[in-house]
Length: 278
Length: 96
Image (cartoon, rainbow over all chains, first blue to last red; front, side, top):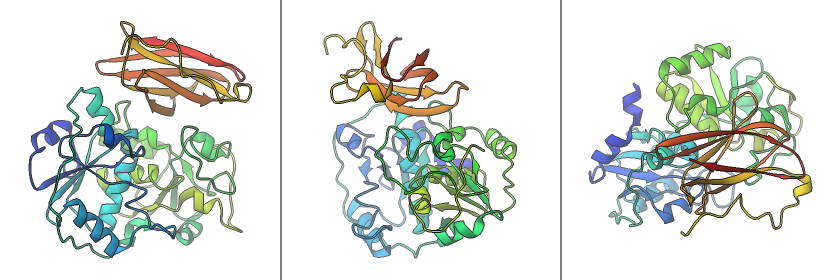
């Protein structure tokens, strides 16, 4: 796996806007952004309505993912290119989610919507019509998904990378100040976790830093990538971006994203919590 | 759009005494610009980012201290250093 297998630039996307076997998908934190405009022929996936079980706190199941992609007109042999706002947070989350259900031909647009806008590239309001498919998903690949017991067992033994902002990590804040507050009961972080905010992976324009810069970042932060790693944040979307960096760009094998993240861990009874900075 | 409003968004409904607000607008030749505004802490580390509104405005709820506000718009980047205090909205007009 190399960078070009998992990441495409805007020129690549512009050259494939009308390619019937390439499906461009916008996934945004602000799910209304798509209504205003989007990349030509892009369809929308709503990270909340489409990807979460409407009752339980969990993802839609395998049949639900099949129904979603079928309705969106995405076929098993289509290449899916994901992009979104907020430096691709939720597009990275969707990328990880597609991989979880076994869709291998998936790529991220480097820089997402921000870079596209800053480059003054075209956005349109027209919503494309794609014929429904009969998509077949695989069972979840839990080699890339961590659960709460994995995290509790990882304390002091496995790399734990907390990608939230320093104030969330130290316990001053429960969520980034500009976002709705899906709150945990207690602030802080998992003991032995290193705080490496997601933003350190990206440039101002939302593109990812070079492989050399990223490798140096984790080395400086004393994360031994030869051993197992779990990334977490608040609800699992920023840590999906770090999972993408480690697993997809740098090719590190055993990296999991903990989607329960701090809203789950910080509400568990009896688990250890640490406060303070790195 | 005929001219940008001066300053950041309206403060109606916000208890300014409890907040440390950094806000403003991004303009070019007096017209509001669509883009993004980043908030960097005193050490230059990323803290938050928002898209500008249709009227070019932005707002952050921060903590007292020195911050850098960085506007990213097509073809330009502009930095402003501000000192924010609780109980007042620090206005940051950014003309690029």
